Amino acid sequence: MKPISNETPISFLTVGDFMELLNGREKKQDIQIQNNIKRYTYGLLGIRNLFNVSHATAQAYKNTFLKPAVSQNGRKLVVDIDLAMELFNQKQSGRK
Image 1 (tube, rainbow, N blue to C red):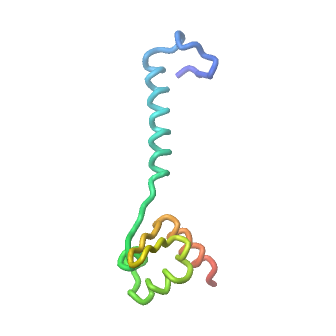
Image 2: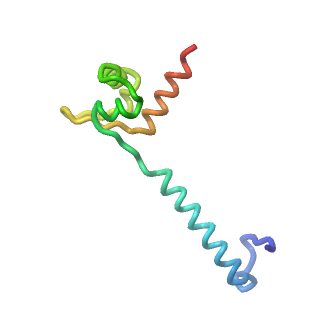
Image 3: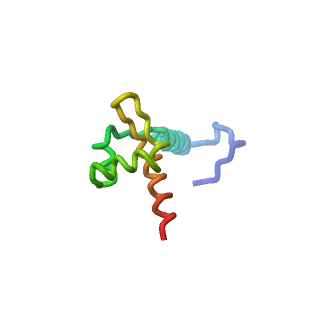
């Protein structure tokens, strides 16, 4: 494939070159959209399943290092999975 820059006139592109440019842009947009999707788990059961721990340990996690990742309204708990995993990994790296 010949080098294509921002200054290359469209009239110099073949249909294949043009389609490649369009496909490359679509892939980048799909990756950006996937990165923006938030994943959530709900309740202490969600924390238990996420970290494979007991109910008491899930409660302790919720009240300590997971606090920034947990939103609670009454009895309803919502946990941001990505933030929870990041906080858990930070906690684990602090151990010796």
